[in-house]
Amino acid sequence: MFSTRLLVAGAVLTGLIAWGAVAFMSRETADASVTPVAATPLASGDDADRPQPDRSGLRRVGVASFYADWFAGREMADGTPMNPNGDNAASRTLPIGTTAKVTNISTGQSAVVTIQDRGPYAKGRLVDLSPATAHRIGITRRMGVARVSVSPIRVVLPDGSTKPGVAASDSEVARLR
Image 1 (cartoon, rainbow, N blue to C red):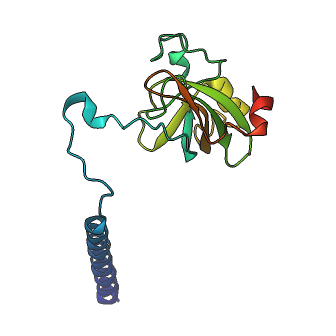
Image 2: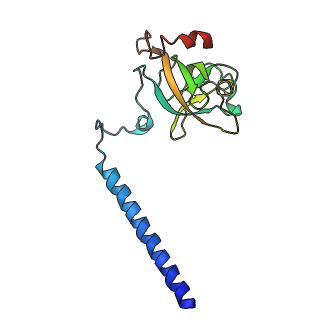
Image 3: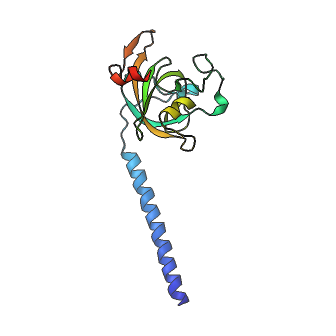
């Protein structure tokens, strides 16, 4: 009986090791087969982690979080203090001053925000919202994050002019302001 248990345990362990090796090799093969869309040289210093500005005006889908309480009153990238009750938001790619409609995909609730800060810096996050805006679209402190769509309304260009984004003609935007 002892030897049977030992044989079964050995077989299970061998199977797990083999499964892990196959999974690891499959992942390496999959990663190696991905061809980059555009090869760009690596930047050095602070620019290495800085994504390119998104002036396309197109809708993006990703994860939103909200500012922690300790950011209240701190200076944002545009020089104004972070207002936890305002419509301010942070994006790593949308230009400062851009307005956008943010919609919580699970609730369908939307709000209009102005990009006034840089961030979020947590991996996989698309936008940080003021606590009031997060609450307005159904992101609770308990949840912390939610899947959202960010549809630019007005995108600020490098020369200071603006161009309409995908949500510029959205009739709901006027109601949300």
